[in-house]
Length: 77
Image 1 (cartoon, one colour):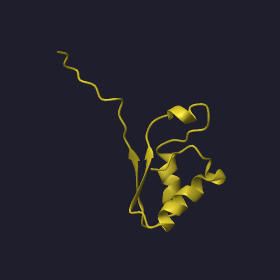
Image 2 (cartoon, helix red, strand yellow):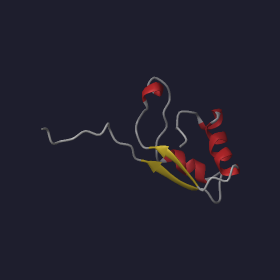
Image 3 (cartoon, one colour):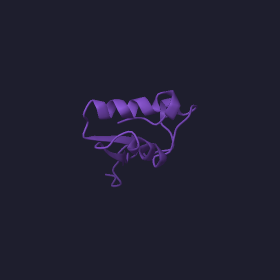
Image 4 (cartoon, one colour):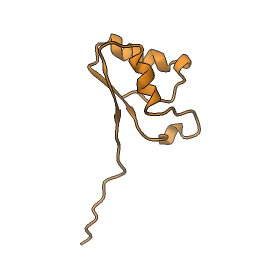
C-alpha cells in the first residue's frame, strides 16, 4: 500500500521504484479522495498515480485498494 500524498518529484516516484526494486508482486494505492491524517495536504488521484508508477516498473502489478467505511449491521435487534 503506497499512499498517494507525496508529489511525484518529492518522493512519490521513489516509493513506487522502491517497491519494484524490493521485488513486490503487486502495489496498491487508495481510491479515496483523502485519508484522515493527510486531509489538509496533497492527495493525488487513484488513476494518475498508478499510471505514473507503470512508467517506472516493467513487472509490478498495480491497482487501487477499495476501502469501505466502518462495518455495521443494517439489522437491529
